[in-house]
Amino acid sequence: MRSFMYRFFRRVLLVVPIGLALAVSAYLVMHRAGPDTQSEEESVRTLRVIEAPLVDLVPRATGYGLAGPGQVWEAVAEVKGTVLTVHPRLDSGEMIEAQSVLLHIDPSEYELAVARLEAGIEETQAKISELSEEKANAQQLLSIERRSLELAKKSLERKRTALKKNAVTPYEVDREERDFLQQQQQVRQLENTLALIPSRQKTLQAALAVNRANLEQARIDLGKTTIKAPFQCRLAELDIEEGQFLRAGQSLFKAHGTGVTEIEARFRPEQLRNLLSRQKRGRFQPGLGTDTFKQLFQDVDVLIRLDSGEWAAQWQARIDRIRESVDAKTREMKVVAAVDRPYEKAIPGLRPPLTAGMFCRVTLSGPVQPERIVLPRTAVQEGTVFILDQQQRLRKQQVTVDFAQSDFVVIQSGLSGGETVVVSDPSPAIAGMKVSAVADEGLRQRLLTLSQAGKADQ
Image 1 (cartoon, rainbow, N blue to C red):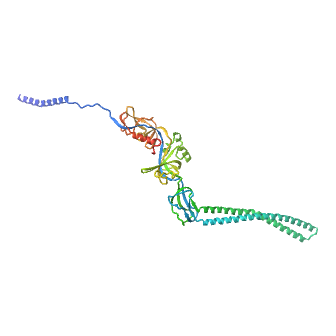
Image 2 (cartoon, helix red, strand yellow):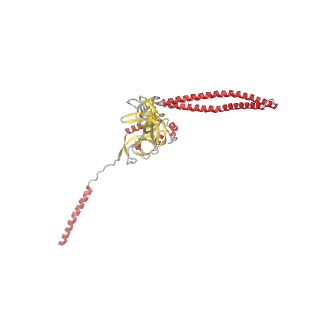
Image 3 (cartoon, rainbow, N blue to C red):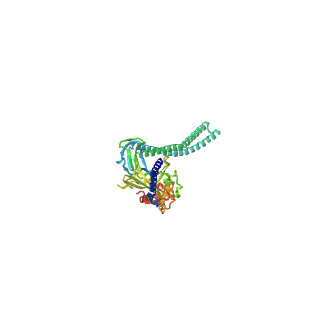
């Protein structure tokens, strides 16, 4: 019995603590405080936006190139001789007026050639006159000798008749026949002389023509001893001195014309095409002739700009021509813009003359395209833009881009203008998410500046 009671109390002592522990745990679970609860709120993204501007667009294309003279004259000594005198301002960089005498070459040799040929011409002309007189005299003599021949013939016939009647001796007939033959020979000689006169005249006329041609050449050579500037120009490097002997064909110096300065700028074909109206775009293609190209781009304004640090200058220009080939590597077309009378347009301290070697920007501006929508390039991703609806929620919008220019694109369809367009990266973009819009007015003003007339180059 005692053993039974011991085992009983021992089990009780084991079970009671376990039960108490379970009771305490149940109490704590039932009476513990629940987790803090908050009402669920929608997340809002902050994004930069602009109102899609509807502008009167001026399409532009920009290229770069070096300025060069429209005319280049390379002076070459066409005759040999010693330099007698040179222009007092014959030096590199000097401005020379048209028809100014730049240098004289000793003309003595060419003056002698002219005098010798003039004398030869006078001699030939005298021979021609003498031959004409000789012809006239021969014709008169021939007329007389032919009359004498007729008389001699009649006399011979009478003698022969008398011989038959034994009125004269055979000797007298023979003598009369000899006189007749001699007279006939004289007539034939005069006829031969007259027959040769035309060929002699031709020979003298040919000699006269040669002398006259040589005289003309000698006078041309004499004129080449004086070298004049063919147009107003600016001299490049040269090394000519008085007393220097020049060889025929020797290069003397180069001079750049001041009437026109040209800049050959490169443009991609699509840049040029975008300057045209829709009606003209179909006619544009690489390989156009200059006349057709100028006709298509006759409404395009050309502006040349030179930037040098904080100082800048610009010139109005014109399209002069398009080069004959497209660059094989870049596929760019080469357009030549021209500035007329660049030295006359110089303004001291503000605008220098546009001279060779200046690196310039060439901007072509097409006719105004009214009511076009422009957006930053970064706002369009694979033909899609993000816009905000009236509840300020994000929405995708498909658009068609007409063309890109500078830092913006021109929208052809998909927007009508005035939409609120997201211009910052909305990634991750969830359609319908709430957006806190921040208007980027600076970006919008920059778009207006780049796209509208009269502002892009200021």
